[in-house]
Amino acid sequence: MTMSKRLGAEFFGTFWLVLGGCGSAVLAANFGGDGNPLGIGLVGVSLAFGLTVLTMAYAVGHISGGHFNPAVSFGLWAAGRFDAKDLVPYVAVQVLGGLLAGFVLFQVASGTPAFIAGGFASNGFGELSPGGYSMHAALITEVVMTFFFLMVIIGATSKRAPAGFAPIAIGLCLTLIHLVSIPVTNTSVNPARSTGVALFADTAATSQLWLFWLAPIVGAIAAGFVARWLQSDKD
Image (cartoon, rainbow, N blue to C red; front, side, top):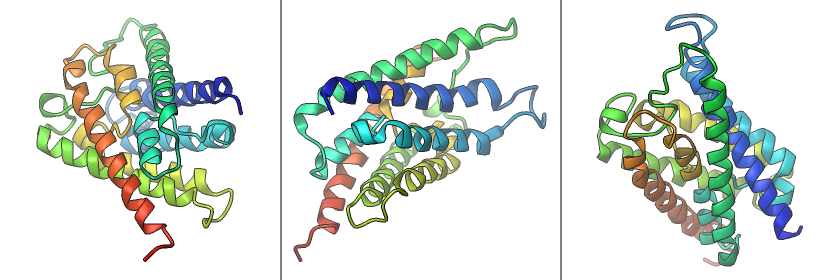
């Protein structure tokens, strides 16, 4: 595939991830008020994020590799599965896709008089953490969750893995990650997802973005090197 098609696939894939995942949190998580049966809650939002990755991995993953996440690109580079020269263009279009999705979501969400941006599905620690968790807890959570996300991605897309099932494993893994970590950081494991909505929040989310770039990339690179060792034929 040409680079333009690969970048287009990454742009649209990241757009869908942020629009679908963050959109479920902003528009549907507490629809009708707390306790309303129409609200999808934490489980629904977790499933939404998993479904965005699963659907776009099948739709365009064969074009670009289906990263939709700067941390994934860095992790695959560390695993020897992605060229360093492609990192900057991939990360750039992922962030642009996330930003456009955040903009579109803001336009939709603000279409009701009751709209209050608030956190706008952004990530955070301390006062910006859904459960009031510390920066230390948030850092550990994002590193560890991204580490295992990349372990699943690299393993599921290995030549030795059953063909055709990788998007399912990856989507379910992202769902599980959200079920565990939404209370701590509102779950990032994806710098483009964090950036895409932080700019539209009425909080200090942008001042904490550094953690949601640093921690996922560190966790992903660590997973890439570990996965390279585990899957090597050398003793």
